[in-house]
Length: 230
Image (cartoon, rainbow, N blue to C red; front, side):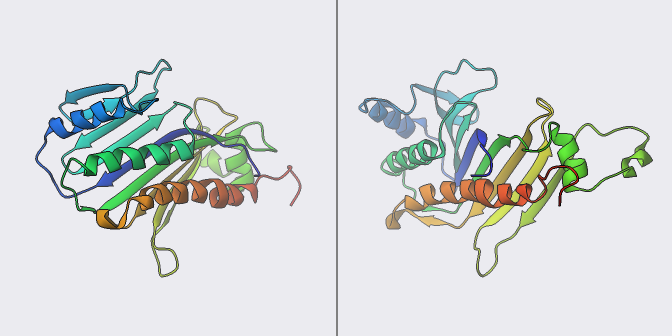
């Protein structure tokens, strides 16, 4: 791999037809989790957003939760150190339990958001990398009479005949650490029929991750050259 990505967020929303809010089935799922040697979530709560399964976190800004809204299940693992495989398997496990207690026949869509940080190999400042290395700026920003403190690019890849999934990609400098590039991929996937199995939930998370760490990082590497080298 060209870079060592440091993934800071895994988020997926699995959409379904609107259901009447009922925390009881989710509480039963929570009880079942404690039959596992290492329960996926330790806490259960009912909030204004819906029933929530969660884990305590100590790192500022960290989140580990599954929220059950009327039209979707939202999984969030932010700054928890979880791997992509662990996240995908957790999503599969929880959804499998939920569909055993809630009448959901189809998930109408799945959206996966992955955020990661990488350091350019030949630039110490991510803003310099984007402005000079990727965008080829020289003195053009002088038009603003001040220097921008964040540079970025957004690309949207709609589905087509060969690639049925959509991807929205952001590549930006990172305000919290000028050495790091922030990359986000938000991918959308087709409906999933529960009767045919839930493996696509795992496959979709993996596809979103691979698009980021393979295609996006390969694209970035094309500009990450020693200054003066082409």
